[in-house]
Every structure is written in C-alpha cells, then in structure tokens.
Length: 591
Image (cartoon, rainbow, N blue to C red; front, side, top):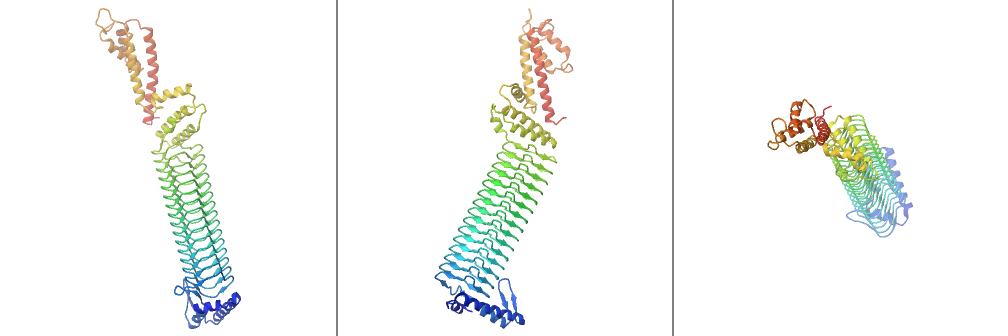
C-alpha cells in the first residue's frame, strides 16, 4: 500500500482487529506463494528485493507507508498500535507523534523505518518484535522511550538518535548489529540484562545521565570508542564475549565494572576516568589494555583476574589505586605509570614477567605479601616514600637498577616516644630483595636507610643505640663513605700532634722547639708521632722513628696526659681505619 491507502486503512476506525485481519490475510498469501514455489526474493542486508512479478505485487500490497520524508505525517493525539501486526515493510520516516504512542507487543515482520521520526510524548515499544531491520537513525525521543524486552532479530540502527528523556532497553535482545553511534542520551539510559548477539556500536555516543549496562551480555565485539559518560556508568556483572573497545572513552562520573567478564580483549587505551573506577573482581580472559589511561579518583582492581597480558604503560593514577589480591597470569606492564595516590598491590600474584620500569610512586606503595613468580623489573622506578615489600616472595631476583627512594620525609622525622617500626621493616624487606638479586649497591643503601630510620623512628633520644647510630652516620654515612672517616682520621692526627707538641718538654739552653734529646725539631716529631700512632701497625709506622719522636719530645719520661692522649688516639684511629676499610669494601663490592 502507498501512504494514502495505508492511512485510509488505519483511519477507518476499526482498530487493531481490522488491521490484523488484513495483515493475517497478507501473511497467508505469502505462505501460499511459498508453498507453490512462486516466492522469489533476493535477500539483501537491509531489505529483500523481489525477483518476479507475483512477489513484487505482494510486497507492494503488504507494505505500510504511514509517513515519508516527502510527505511526513503528524499524529496529533495519543496513538496506540499495541499488539498490531505489520506483515512487511512499514515506513514512518519523519513522522511526528505529538502524544503518547504505544507499540507495546507490536510485531514488525518486515523492515521498519523510523528514520528522523519525532516522538514528543512517551514512546512504548515494550516487548515489541522487529523481525526485519529496525531503523531509528536520527530519530528524536522527547519523552521516555521504552524498549523493555523488545526483540530485534536483525540490525537495529539508532545512530545519531536523541533520547531527551529516559531510554529503557532492559532485557532487550539484539540478534543483529546494534548501532548507537553518536546517539545522545540526555537522561538515564538502561540496557540492564540486555543481550547483544552481534556487534554493538556506541562509538562517540553521549550519556548525560546514568548509563546502566548491568548484567548485559555482549556476544560479539562491543564498541564504545570516544563515548562520553557524563554521569555514572554501570557495567557490573556485564559479560563481553568479544573484544570490548573503550579507547579514548571519557567517564566523568563513576565507572562500575565490578565482577564484569571480558572474554576478548579489553581496550581502554587513552580513556579518562574522572570519578571512581571500580573493576573489583573483574575477569580479563584476554589482553587488558589501559595504556595512557587516566584515573583521577579512586581505582579498584582488587581481586581482579588478568589471564592475558595486562598493559598499563604510561597510565596515570591520581587517586588511590588498589590491586590487592589481583592475579596476573601473563606478562604485566606498568612501564612509566604514575601513581599519585597510594598504590596497593598487597597479596597480588604476578605469575609471569612484570615490569614497572620508570614508574613513579608519589606516595605510599605496598606489595606486602605479594607472590612474584618470574622476573620483576623495577629499574628506574621512583618512590617518594619507602615501598612495602614485607613478606613478599620472589622466586626470581628482582631488577632494582637505578631505583630511587626519596628519604626526605625520613630526614624530617624526629624521634618520638611512640616507636614506628614500619619504615625500618620496609627497608629490611628491600635489603632482603637486594641480597637475593646480588645487588650489593642497593643492599648497602637499604641497610644504611634501615639504620637511619630506626634511629629516627624507633630509638629513644639520647639512648645508647640512638647515640651510637648517630656517630656511625656522622663518621661514615653508615659504612658507605671513604672520605668521611679519612677526614676524621686526619682531624684526630692533627689534634693529637698539637697535644703532643703542647705537652713536650722545653729544651734547656737550646733554640725553642728543638728536640730535648737528639737532633731535629719537636713539631716535626709531634706530627711523626701522631701519624705513627694513627696508622697503628709497626710495619707502617717504623718503631725506630717512633722512639726518636718520643726522645725528641719527652726525653726519658712521657707525661701521664700524653699517655692518655696516645691511648685515646689509638682507640679512635682504630675505629676510623675500620670505617675506611668498610667504606672501601662497600664501594668496591669486596667480600
């Protein structure tokens, strides 16, 4: 039927019974043609094309044209097509529905075209069945759009469609391609428990209110590239059996993917999460890609499972990031990732090589009780606070090349009556990892920081441990410095030489500062004696020269004060020489 004939049949006022009687008659005629073998249609991707005159005549008679772009029709009042049957193509192009329109449980046996239609009131397509392609491209729904439990047996096109009020597709079934590219949802949109049996396209779609896809099932690929979610996005318990594409998507509210399952690749490269991002207990059965993604608030991947490769290269976490209890079964990449909030990897399991090269941790990072089964690369990583690797188990030695831990906060801490063992224990755990990796440089560094943090955060001020640790730090930087003990040794030699000269006997009848006994000058002998006592070993400090120095300075009797200075110098020099040797050992990795 043409548009005039269609509107005439619809406008006869006999309602659904008369219309469905005509529709049943048309379907009976089609079946009769099929039974006789006269039905001949070339089925195309959008509409069938009859290939004989009899079939062509049936299509012309069964077609229902309510509106067209050339002659758009206006439905001024509330209109009901509930339970109506449309046996073939039905066209509603550019139609305007001023009031409530009801297509509840309607059945469209052929293609239906609502391209550019305007629904100014509520539109109800609940439980409707679209057996052909359904075209709603560029349509406008100004009232609530209901498609609850609707079935789209072929392609459903909603590209560039605008939903100004709520859009409900809960429990809908899309058996063909579902296209919502560049669609705009100005109020809440719900696709909860919907099933997409083929590819679903939401590229560049805009969701201005809550978007609900809880428990939705995507049997094939799902595309949300460059989509914008201005409020909360709900994908809890959703199942993506194909690839899930969210590249460059923007989540301005919270993003909820708790217990979601990604059986294909999950791609969130370059996505921006401006609210909380919840992937708790999510399962990624293929590769998960979050490269260059930005997480501006709290992020949860707690108890998530990554069965394929996990890519977080150059990702930025501005709030706390939790991966506690997560399992990474394949290679994991966090290269150049930035954690501006806390980074929690407690009890995580890395089963394959894991890389945090050049990662930045701007606050606390915890790998407490983590299980690391293969290579673990932290080369070039930067930690603003001491990371927690307590009870971490590494089956292979971690790579710690060029790791830097900023200890400024520890330097600023003052001793407290309430001891804090955390930082000391963290450094002890790091030292254990360095020993496992035969990384002598970091072993020495972490041991020194362990002692320093213990002095500042555990030991009581002016307690013996506190004093001795302070002396160890000042004189040798906890065994790391060669220059410091050398300078202190030279200072002791200078002070001792001065003391020896001041306590020397004054010669009688000779020029001042000449030797009391023998030839020479007392100041030279004082230096000679101080150096000799500072070197300790007779092979280094010749005993003959030492005796000549004693004779020059004191003759036959050495003053009691001088003996005390000699003993004290020997004691201090022994300690400083030991620290110099310790510094040499630690600097050149001697065993």
